Structures are given as C-alpha cells and as structure tokens.
Image 1 (cartoon, rainbow, N blue to C red):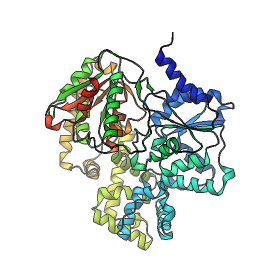
Image 2: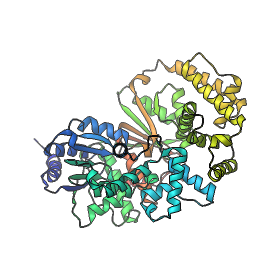
Image 3: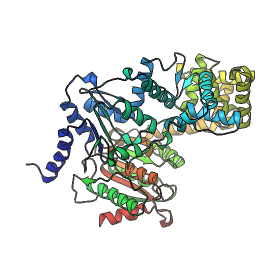
Image 4: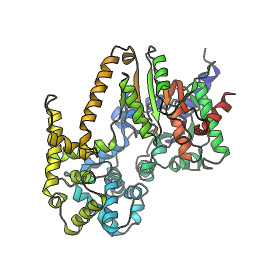
Amino acid sequence: MATNKEKDREEYTKKILDSDSNKKVIVAGPGTGKTFTFGEYLKKIPGNRENKIVMTFINPLVDDLNSDLGEKAIVRTFDGFVKKECEEHNLIKSDEQYFLGANKIISEDHDYIFGTKKDFSHLFNTLDIENESEDIQNFVKKQNEFYKFVDPSVIKYRLYDHFNKHQHEIPRYDVVIIDEFQDFNKLEAKIVVEHLSKNILLAGDDDQVLFEFKGSNPDCIRELFNKENDYESFTLPYCSRCPASVVKFVNRIIEYSKKHTIFPADRCDKQYLPFREEEISSVKFVPYGMGSMFPIERELKDIRDRNASVLILHPYGATNEAERLYEYLTLRGFKVNRKKKEVKKKVFEALDTLSNDQRSNLGWRIILPFLFSKSEVKKMIKRCYDENKNIFDIVEIEYKQKVKDVITVIQHFKSSKTKTPTTGQSDTLLKLFNMEASKIGISDDRKNKIREMKRKYLGYKLNNTLTIEMCNIGNSKGLSADYVFIYPFSKQHFKLQYPQDIYNIVVALTRTKKKLLIFEPEENSQQSAVKDLYEESAE
C-alpha cells in the first residue's frame, strides 16, 4: 500500500505529465527524481528516439542520463550538441582545433600587446561582444587564426549568430529536455530558449550554481520560473537520494541564507523534503588535528567491508591539503581515483601537438610560460603580433632543442617501460615543471618508497572493497556515493557570506546516499559556523 509521501510524490510528477503546455520549467533540489520524470515524459511524447534529445553539461551526468534514458532519446552534453551543429554547418574551419581555454590565452595576449585586460569569455558568454568595437572583434578573429584554435564560447556564439540568420537550419526535435539549466550562461540560454523551444522541458536548481567561471547565470531559470511568460512552472520536492538528516541540514542552511539575505530576493521558492526517514542521524562531524590524516583512514577502515562507494570532496582553495591527503591514502594502499592536474594536462597536450607539428603556435604558446619569465613571454607575443611572425620563428634554437628533448623523454616513456631517459633529458623535463634537477634522486627515492608501501598494503581487503573517488566540489556534480567525506571543513573554506558559498555547501552535502562525514579542525577558532546550523537542524 502506497504511503502518503509516495502518493504526494506521484502527484507532483503527474502534474508535469498531464500539462498541455509545450514549454515547462522544473525547479527541484538534488535527488528529487528529475531523471525519472524525464523518462516518464519521454514515454508520453510520440515519435522516434532520434527526434528527442536530452542535454546537460557534465560528462558524469550524461553517462547517468544515457543509462536511464538512452533508449528513449539522444543524450549528449550541450557542448557536444553545439560542436556537432557547428561542424554540420561548417562553422569550425578544417584546421581549427577545439580548445578549452582559448579565450584565456587571447585575453592574456590582449594585455601583452595593448596593455589592457579584456575577459573575452565573459564578453562572448554574456553577448557583450556585440557591443565591442570592430577592432576588438577582429583581434579575436586574428588570434584564432594565429593559433588555429577555437574556444567553446566562440563556437557557441557562431552557432547563435548562424541560427539567427538561417532559421530554416535550426534542428527540429519532437522534444528537447535540458537538465542543470541553472548553469547555463546567457549565450547558451538564448540558443536553447530562442531556437530549440518548440516543445521543451527545462530543469534545474538555482541553489546549485557551480560554473561561474563560464558565466553561469541562475537568472535564466529564475526569470522563466518566477515571471509571467509562456513557461509553466513545476517543482519536485521529495529527495529520495539523501538521508533525512542531510536534507534537514540543507534546509537549515537555506533558511539561514534567506533570513540573512544571502540569497537574492528572486530565488526560486520550492520545498526540499526528505522521502526517507531515519532513527539515527547520518551526519557525523569528525575532528582532526592539524596535519593528521588518521581520522580519515580510521573511518575508511571502518567501512571497508561494506562494499560501499566513497566520495572524498575538498573545497576549491584546499589544493595543498588535497594533495597531502591523496599521497597519504595512496601510501596506505587505498586506490583513489582522481583527475589529473589541469596545468600538467595542458602541458602534455601541448607537447603532443608539438611532436606532430613543431611550428604549432598553440603548442608553443602553452609551453612558453614554463621556459621564460612573464616579461619575456610578453615581448615575444607582442613581437609576433607586430611583425606577423610565428612563435617558432623567434624562439632561440637552444629552447627549441630543450623542448625537442622533453618530447623525446615522453616518447621514451610511452614506447617502453624499460627505456629510461638520459640525465640531460630528465633535467629538461623536470625544469619544464619548475622542479630542481638536483632533486631527481629524492624524487626517485620517494617513488620507490611509494611502491614499497603499496606492495606492503596490497594484502589489505580494503583495496578490493572500496571504490574511492576524489575531487573538488566543483567537479562533483553528477556524482554521488554511499559515503561522502568532506575535508577540510574549516571556516577558511566553508563560509556563509555569499550565494556561491551556499551553492557549494548544498552540492557537497547532497552527494550523500547513506552517510556524510565532515572532517573539521579540532581548534574551535578554525571551525566553520555551518556546524551550528547542523546542530540546530538536529534538535
């Protein structure tokens, strides 16, 4: 027999499915059944799978959506959709490389060449580029051609402009579903709302805005949800993912944010209710001493035989603490999956590009800051622009040889584990990453120690029973785990001052499926005020 909560939850979904409106917006908190609702809605819409599309931003979310909805609709990232449309309409040149971060390089170039800063990603994402002078627009075009790359925001603008001029070439779907709409910026939202809205369902939560670096604008979903327009508004209040104590904790934080006007007045008003009840709280605050990782190890050992998934989250500003924790757990035999550092990833991509094309301006532009001072890089970029030269043509031969040596080192590592680089080549590689060549012995010793420690701990049952993911909060969207660890949870990193503070906390807490463990400093002076809100919610 269905409970009152089950009936109530079904009623919220039924309202969405029964609506005759072809423009709908759902605002709902984490774990409230948006994916289930998408699936039911797709069943209702007649037509073939190829004429239905579901889009979101993050690859983990796409993977989950594809698993649940892939038989009913095409599922892809919004960036993937834009790239495909641009390729079909020849909006990306054959020699252009799709490069995330291209606008950052162009912004630096503008500063180096003209002495003024321009945030080109912001200009495109907000459509303010249309108000800039022809000289500014031509500068972007010239640098794109110089590097043979294109930034995601630039191709989105190209597609937006193309659809405005060629309405008949806009793809027509029987239904378009957009998830995480709160993370769309103005440019992206206009592509969706103005050009893909024949039959559309938008979903998101303006309490979970994470991608401010690309101009995420929650106003896009707030305006559709709150104001009089042709969109019908819905909510889904019941959280089935998180334990009740986590949901209550989140609500206390939201109430605090509303009371102290941290949230804007036009925040989307919605309920966030626990679907599952519990007798014992699933939130645990674990004190740790400065520099001590043992409390985390102890908690991991305590759950090692439960065949559980673990997600370790750290705030953006805690990179050093995260590095130490990763090394500590690795030394003790834990297998921790973690993304590569973006800086090193870019460098290796650049070296790979140069191994195929030694004259690549893009490859050299990424490598330059690792070989020269900022003032030297500035002079070189200005000279290339003024004299219409490639970077390769002005780099001295000794640096060309050094980069060639580094590429040789990498190729050695790729081709055979038995081959080792020469001392000179090793020194060059280390120098590229700002390491002192004299420390290579220490580095090797450290690697050997890690191998020995891993061998020592290989017998631990723990290695085979825990799946541990580790990332910063910004990369956790689309992820969830039985046990979520947040470290370090200090007042330095978890504040209650700005909307972004609250967004990050809400996302972090609601990754939890079974238990949330928050590692806070033992010193009272270092503890976040967020804990006080938990104690109030637990009363």
